[in-house]
Amino acid sequence: MIAGVAETHTAIWYLFDDARLSAASAAFIDAAAETGDGIAISAISLAEIVYLVNKGRVTANVYTAVKAAVGDPEHVFRVAAVTA
Image (tube, rainbow, N blue to C red; front, side):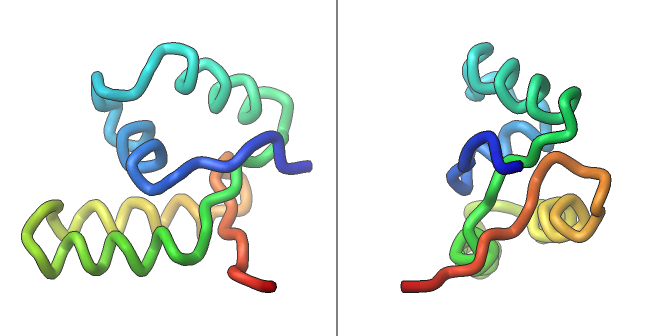
């Protein structure tokens, strides 16, 4: 089951333990992980991260980390397709 949806920065901040992520958001994602639920990340977020890397706003390891997370079936983050 998908418990929620994370926007791009939420996913990045969670993966990199960034202080800008609110305690409530981190707790929600942690709780979903503990119960085996997923947090969806739009496929558009992956494209946005590539854009951010190309603009020098984030480093390439950010894309690598998010891609690894959504590619791991045991991780809380799951890619959500962009559909009508």
